Length: 386
Ligand SMILES: Cc1cc2nc3c(=O)[nH]c(=O)nc-3n(C[C@H](O)[C@H](O)[C@H](O)COP(=O)(O)OP(=O)(O)OC[C@H]3O[C@@H](n4cnc5c(N)ncnc54)[C@H](O)[C@@H]3O)c2cc1C
Image 1 (cartoon, rainbow, N blue to C red):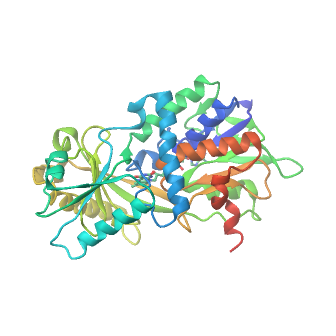
Image 2: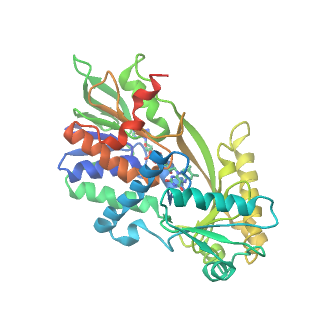
Image 3: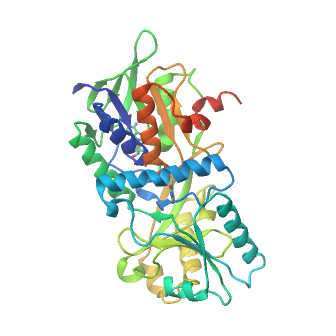
């Protein structure tokens, strides 16, 4: 195959497909090159909670995440409400008066969110019981609902966007890795080498998640920029619909120090994760770490869902590992790569919340040549200045 395209996007996850969709919508002839299947990377192993609730320390980054959530409204108009919003909206956290500082922590969280104009609502015991009848709330608990939060079946939306890219004249190449790049006499990108042949293009967007730094290095050579994307593993446990279905109606964050969270699964079962399992594979052999993490997540969840049959849950739960692309400073990296005209890189954690917005902003920049103001804090150049 030898092909010519206005732009080549490397990676068929949420970031790559969102960008390809925005470029195709602007009339560009775009090719997506994906080494495996669509959403087969981190996007297919994500908790997929759309939120700005967990990003309260940096107001600019909080606003970026709010804008990311709002961008889903545009996608709902194209793909339908069901494609972008599953189940009941809202995330519920609650306090446990028997844990010292639990009430204060929740009040503090509400204060921060209200200061940021984030819509939240206090819930009393009656509200909690009505909203989540299967959850064992402690006596005296109060709840806090973050109203705009929601979750989605991210792989499904990726597939819908990919179909639309093809309808708009673009090409999606699955099971087709990028293996190299050619640059012209001025050092600008001239073509992309793939398993399926060469694609001549003036614009390459690297959206390959944790692999992005390696691809940028392949294109830019030894003098290329420092792109500090690290892989941070997370563990997710699934219970099938006949076991975990209906036990949670919202995204739920119980009062426990490890940041346990669960929600209805994409298949109608139950999906469980925890913040303290981020990086859980470090210094452990993989099979043991996964088995241990799985048991731990189930035991912790059972405390809050007494109707869940413990033995059956432990027998039938499945576990999977996802690897978050995590920048050294915890923020996204989005922008052109210095020294290689036409090469662009984008990677972030919270990429389900941010992907469609970032894709739109990147397409704007590629089409107009001007940086959208929202991207200014997240340029690759900030790491070269350290
Ligand atoms: C456990 C867990 C929970 C999470 N929870 C949330 C959450 O609640 N909310 C949220 O917003 N985010 C969450 N995230 C983060 C979010 O899932 C990621 O930020 C997002 O999926 C990253 O998408 P991506 O498109 O950048 O990467 P990926 O989905 O990894 O896509 C990159 C693609 O590039 C392809 N690729 C790699 N090398 C090549 C090559 N040489 N040629 C061609 N293709 C290549 C890969 O096959 C892959 O499909 C979570 C992540 C994890 C692991």
